[in-house]
Amino acid sequence: MPFSALNLPSIALTQLKAVAEEKFGSAVRVRILYLHHDFALYFGKELYSYVIGALQANNSGLGDWIFRQVAFPEEADNTAYYFQRYFPRLDERETALKGAMIAKRVGLKRYFESVVAKYQLDREDLVGMSSMFAQNVAVFAMARTIKDRNPRVVTVMGGANCEAPMGVELARHVAAMDFVFSGPALLSFPELVQAQLDGEPERCHQIKGVFSRQNLDSPHLAGRGAIGEELPIEVPVELDYESFLSDLTRSFPDRSIEPSITFETSRGCWWGERSHCTFCGLNGGSMAYRSIPPSQALEIFRQLFERYADRCKIFESVDNIMPRPYIKEVFGQLEPRSDVTIFYEVKADLKDWEMEILGRAGVRHIQPGIESLATSTLKLMGKGTTAFQNVVFLKNCLRYGILPSWNLLIGFPRETSEVYEGYLAAIPRLMHLPPPSGAFPIRFDRYSPYFTRAAEYGLDLVPYEFYNAIYPFGPESLARMAYYFEDKNYDAEYLVQLVGWQGKLMAAVGEWKARYAGSDGKTKASLRLSSQAGRDVVLDTRSGELEVKELSALVNEVFLPHESVARVRSEIVLETLKEPSGLPLPARR
Image: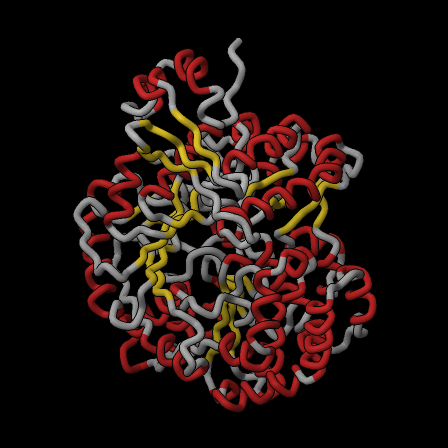
């Protein structure tokens, strides 16, 4: 369902289809429909991409609000209020997109009806829909459209938006949704299908992790019963993405959308088990780390490459973090095609030799948990890394041809103005390293330590205001179903500092991105060692102009032979490199 990424198949629906077909064989017919492709064609790719990618679109719930009138037609239209409140100032492009959005929104009900008719969804026995991030209201709208045409169709939904207690409120308030799956569903979904096949639909209300309006107060859903039981990750499940690839080709024959193939090698987070990052709301109630054996991972890669590498060049892990043993035991042995790129999320403390192995094995795109370039802030969030480690990590990404996608997060409780001053001083010296995608204030997400221990951090959290403009639910229900929260302590010192510094930091990161890409009309930023006339020199274009800096004999002797900072005493580094390096080094104490 919209608004999800157009280039990615749903690994969850693919796994559900596989386990259902394995269990029931010819007794069931299962198909996966990528309706977000249809809606992207309806809205136009530019508008669709804006809703997915624009910061203000995410902070205002735009992807859900668009479908509000189809999901809740009995509610008064609030278009004028919504845009005045959340989009008061638009540039020329955004104004044009707003006009297109309003026009398309008027015809949405008819389009939903045409999609239901096109795929004959009202003739199915059961229709299930996935919901993560901005997909909730589109799911409700589709369920309502189907039920209006045929009330006998069983409608179900699952995904990250459905975990308890959020899923409880969805089941309570959305009359068109029969069942809401909380947590893993590879066991609970076949159990529900079996009950339907047996002609005993009442059994559906007794399954762990499955909410309905009839069972919300049932004892079996208390505690761990609110989460579905998990199929062990070691159990092989076929990943058949043929329907996705066919649909992508049909919808975008110009090949303007490059497909990725998704796979799973672990669940939970091994670092989060030790130190839950304060802002992270991922994993919900399932932080416990589990991964498949390296030999099984190698077999998955072999199968995926053999089946899809002729049509797909990008293979994306859905893991929250790469299993650490994989660097040696998987990627040290993997030999992918040279045109294949593998994506993983990683901890930003990988060593030089580990990065070299990853780059050689085709792991050319990563999402590292950098988050900050201030050690004090990294300590606040429980990252277990330092600013210097993060800078070295970015340098190694450059060295081994690995693209890091990362955000500079700001606005942490107890973060001080000294951190922001340090950023403005450091960024000009880092222009040659891969920049963040932007400088973004953190959110307080459900399940994060900031949410579960709000009082400890001095936070008074309430749901983002946009939920009131989207869902016709009461405040108590919204508080239980919301995922994004904000601090009501608007005069808190960390928020006052953020307001004063955010614009400057965003501008500095914008300049960093332009300097690194060479898109500002100046010489592209770089910092390279070279030899000229028997002298070792540094060629520095970070400022946009070429500067040639000769290295002293002492720097050559101490610094150049030692790539690992652990081999050189910090006192020597500080004394000899404070000026020649151009890096922001601390003063000696």
